[in-house]
Amino acid sequence: MTVPFLRPQLPPLEAVQQYYRLAEDARFYSNGGPCERLLRERLSAHLDGATCIPVNNATSGIMVALLGATHRAGTRGRPLVVTPSYTFAATAGAVEALGHRPLFVDVDPQGWQVDPAALESALAEHGGDVAAVLVTHTFGVPPAAGLQERWAAACAAHGVPMVVDAAAAFGAVDAAGVRTGTGSDTHVFSFHATKPFGIGEGGLVTTRDAELAGLFDGIRQFGFAQGRLATLPGLNAKLDELHAAVALAVLDDFDRVLTARRATAEHYRLHLEPAGFGFQTGSAGGTWQAGYLQAPDPAARESLLAAGREHGVGITAYYERPLHHHPAFAGALVHGELPVTERLASCALALPMANDLTPAERARVVDVVLDAVKQS
Ligand SMILES: Cc1ncc(COP(=O)(O)O)c(C=O)c1O
Image (cartoon, rainbow, N blue to C red; front, side, top):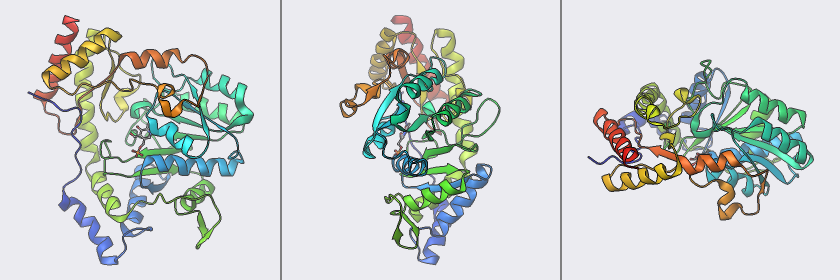
């Protein structure tokens, strides 16, 4: 039996159509039509009243959030944005696209999240040159209790705004049961087709700060804050009506999607943790875009990748190359040697995941993994 790495699944056309009809009836296909307005309301209810600004993808959402945050803080002209290297290329790509230079910091070995001590020391060394801090919720997992508050406190102490790239974390809950995006920080989510909340291309920026919400709204539509007068740095990051309709249909079925993914992840944990595989602290409340875990050592990781290729099981290495090793980020600054990032990358694995992965498929994945480990 072959098992693909990911098997994305968007809602059926009929489920989308009931919403898209609203746009058709209104002859309104973008620029805040009826689907987008309804989506804002329903997402806001889902996130405990946070202001929700849909965008066309998370990469532009990060740009909107950074532009708004640095515009207000008066730090936009500074060169650096502190961010982890242990993330997806879009995190630092958005930073560079705005003309800033990433300053990469290390992550912690249990949660794989930005190490607060590394962030504090980077800010102490470079504070006056830092435009913003762009932390992540690594692999869609919320940080451990108190960690995000510590990041925010370090930023506040240096007068630098913080944005959270929570791309894969829409639907995540922390150990205390608090849903990601309901707090006071600015969060950016991705609705890419491969994300658990997948709509094709799309994303979301959330905030509880009315002034920032106004800035984000203006920036994502050409910098228009008053009529068609461009008063802000602007881009076009609007979500069109068809994708908003897809998002409404995804939301209707999202609890089932998360339950299914967490059940598969729990199956992986149950069978693989005793065999020496490492799981991320807090991942039980994550969204599980893929089955992220750590191999016992780098050699075992290579055997597993080979076994996956041999048996047609989509075992992948994620994030196998930290961003400071990507040619596009050769001009970035690196704060220290990033030893945890390097070690996590050398053992990083991602196992197959889908909304509808069958019990037979997940059992097959576990069998291939355990056989490969025994032989390595
Ligand atoms: C951590 C992180 N940031 C940003 C992005 C970019 O999201 P999008 O594809 O919606 O632009 C991704 C996408 O996978 C991601 O994983």
